[in-house]
Image 1: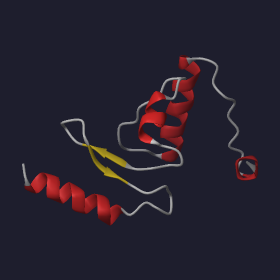
Image 2 (image 1 turned 30 degrees about the vertical axis):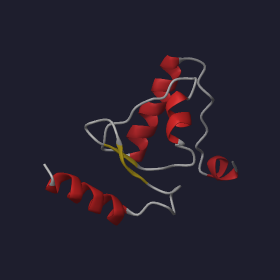
Image 3 (image 1 turned 60 degrees about the vertical axis):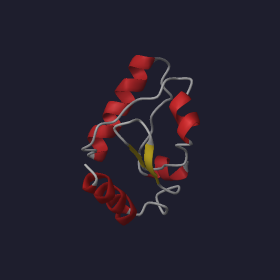
Image 4 (image 1 turned 30 degrees about the horizontal axis):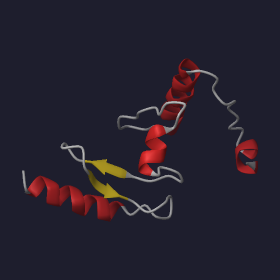
Length: 93
């Protein structure tokens, strides 16, 4: 990815869970992510189950069901859609 080289974002693929957690922590800090983040295993089970690539935004409801799934991002991200779903969910609680 030329943009990664240009922007000096060069991270080797992690070789174990500890390295993967370290890379994820670096990304969370450098990107200023303010919400909980989770790390998929090397089997990429969650990515496969939720088709998380390319980027998507999910809202997982308290009962474990998917309340909202965005279109692929970043151009498929529409915060107003997520806001409407959240308002509907909280209106009913």
